[in-house]
Length: 442
Image 1 (cartoon, rainbow, N blue to C red):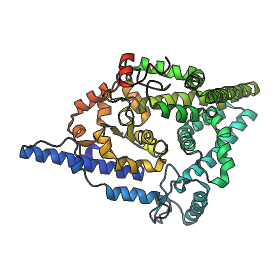
Image 2 (cartoon, helix red, strand yellow):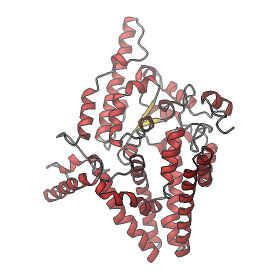
Image 3 (tube, rainbow, N blue to C red):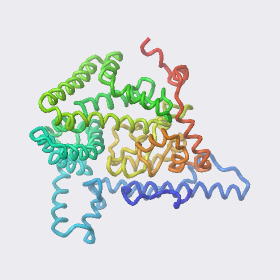
């Protein structure tokens, strides 16, 4: 697979473009190795680590962009545009706008916990200046036109906000200490408007999902489902949608974490009570402002989680390398703060989102050795859609092969490998491959 066979979307982040270019050079190195071995009649090595192309210059460039003391430092300010393009004298902004933007960036770098994260201030300002007044106005003077615009706006905000919250719950905040009160309180204002129930994301994702890691005890685990079956996906979605309010507190209770069980249950039920009060105040407005976001977000999160953990290698299903995937695409990484680097996130849940590309490149031989899967030009939603359509050829074409083993595979072999990784696990197989499972609650 050469450069012409990889799709370099013009909207890729600078980091993703560098990563994809490096992977393409690696693929070329493996292909050259195979060609030379074939010409000489000698076997090619399995790992290929000794022939992988040098990524140190790229890694150094990525690290410099994250280092505030480096002249090449580049904070993220907007998701749709890169700061150097906006500040360039040949860019799209007039001189006075560039000076205004530079002043904002200088202030916002001191307002966030990590200086790369100016974009979080940008987004919080955006949400409080649009979502909140729009929601309040709908309760005051409801109209169907305004309601339709509000739903469309919120649908576009939910992904980025959820991944902002993702950073918030893993890092215990995103703003500088002098804004600690705002940092602590903004989720209680914004979460219900974005489809989140209070604190449930923290309890489910940090205290549950990352503990169980898509294993048999994970309430959002995919392993018991046939991941290319629409019926199984509907079963998976329905279980989470209707029962998570009960299942999550029960999980904590059965694991001896009774205080957490009570807290998670109370926050979830308290959120439902607040929504109910909204319906009593203005049914139509509450349906649009509070009801529809919950439905949209929970469906979207389950569609995304299905894609994130659809491919599970039955040889070592409890490996983070083999039970999650990496995406190099625009939707996940530009607009949702490197959410595509899902394997890197599971390997280290505390890793800062801007560090994922650097970590991935530095560890790519480990990814290859552990048969990890990397895709490009596709997001988690479309991974799920392609799976439910059983379109393995399309998925195979978007696979970026890591190491000589995957590089040597034909398109048909790649498609068959992906198909094998989507089969459901039986309970006996789960007991064998997840040691200790079955005795946990006996």
